[in-house]
Image 1 (cartoon, rainbow, N blue to C red):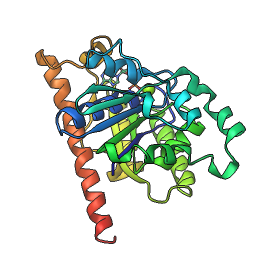
Image 2 (image 1 turned 60 degrees about the vertical axis):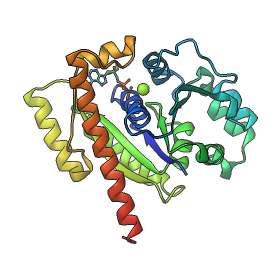
Image 3 (image 1 turned 90 degrees about the horizontal axis):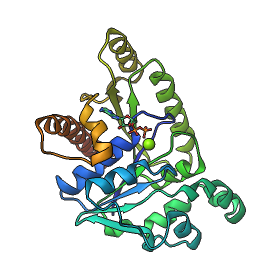
Image 4 (image 1 turned 30 degrees about the vertical axis):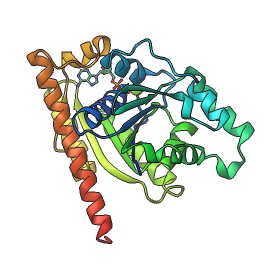
Length: 267
Ligand SMILES: Nc1ncnc2c1ncn2[C@@H]1O[C@H](COP(=O)(O)OP(=O)(O)O)[C@@H](O)[C@H]1O
Ligand SMILES: [Mg+2]
């Protein structure tokens, strides 16, 4: 069965898509895990980026995501980018998801459509990574109900505590529908390195303690150029940026291992 990880924060520009891409990239290429990346944002940022990374910009699925949802079968929506990596790419028609649920699914099933759909795909993968929208939405509710783990990527700034707290509150509310969901942690991203960001980071640590990752992400011009070129690992600057994300990914794996050990010991 696949471990399913959702990257969520109700804020744009926090690093959801970047982290989702890097998680899928490392799981597939470094950890040798069969991975499916699912882009639930109708803007489809992560789909464009990861297709560039694997030189598959022209590859399109037989069926778009929303069509697969309507047909209750996602099998023809998935494309293969690498021997270990599949992508269910974002679709602008996902903006119709909320209306589709309202008109076609009875009320008590509206949180669990993805749970059922992705259960079918479970056996093919070791990991399923979800990228999500920056706003609250029924599609994100469905992602949480289909997932085992949540990661909260946070850009360290004045608004980050509020945004993170809002996301905690949201997860607390929605855990009524998925009692097994576990928080892996908060990945802090420093867009700049000033005394103000240090102060904001201290406040974040004070508010969320050990939920905040030990490893931090910093601004890197490579990450910006990866948006156009895909992730590359050639120049020295690439290697610095890759190493930074790799440390975060290792921490993710350690955190998941700890959670699973604690659960197995009945804690
Ligand atoms: N470590 C980083 N260094 C430089 N730019 C970054 C970094 N992380 C993210 N970005 C850029 O910031 C923007 C927002 O990040 P993104 O992952 O798309 O956030 P979200 O999905 O939460 O909206 C993107 O243009 C992305 O390339
Ligand atoms: Mg995004």
